[in-house]
Amino acid sequence: MVSAVHRGYAQGMQIMKKISSMSCKKFKVFWSLTMGLIRRLRVTQRAMERAMLGVSLRDQIRNVEIRRTTRVTDIAQREAEVALGGPHSSE
Image (cartoon, rainbow, N blue to C red):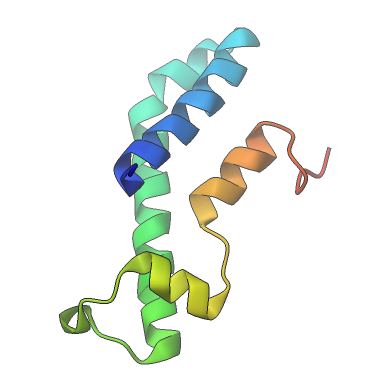
């Protein structure tokens, strides 16, 4: 079973490989900032989903269960698809 941290890291690595292949050196400088923003987006998204369902952290319901109930796509996964030219891309 792959943890959310490993999935997030793998998605970030996919983005980095795509951009580094385009020889964008500025991206490498701001890599930690980018990963920090993705982490903050995930935390914010989880808080909004918990608020939608009226669930607190003390209820100890897994994020997977909350996502299954709300049917909301993970923001980091969606952004990775957009960066890689996936199905939600506006290119």
